[in-house]
Length: 146
Ligand code: HEM
Image (cartoon, rainbow, N blue to C red):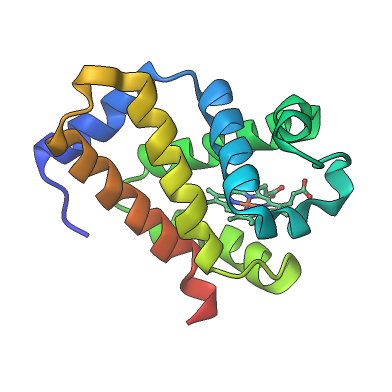
């Protein structure tokens, strides 16, 4: 993957600005609410009965934060995302058996939450850079599947 200076700067800037714990929590909550089949992988998280239960579930908050910090690892290694996520790809496919279509869904939820948090500074160019970054993450996580 080739990154322009603008894309690099934009991704670094977004992740330095956002509250990663809050964004991760909101993105995972949104994913579990809007795409309820994604709940099946989180049986041990307890009550995911409705949107309020999901959003108030401390396991969702904690795991959202884990995922957001996982993304930060990719931000810090933008030239090496496939290698950085190789182990995580094996975990999600061989141990967790997560359907890889779901990576894109969660990635889109991150994009939505980040867009809402950036407001007017989320220009079309910023959106394009973020979506490219998320697409590379999704592809790296899916590597073990293809
Ligand atoms: C665990 C990242 C998408 C289900 C994890 C972990 C990370 C992570 C960093 C912790 C790994 C460890 O403990 O070593 C990501 C990223 C994603 C993503 C960056 C895409 C943006 C998904 C999706 C699902 C999922 C879409 C299911 C719909 C799980 C489950 C665990 C896990 C069930 C184990 C949770 C636990 O046992 O506490 N993920 N993940 N992940 N992920 Fe993902």
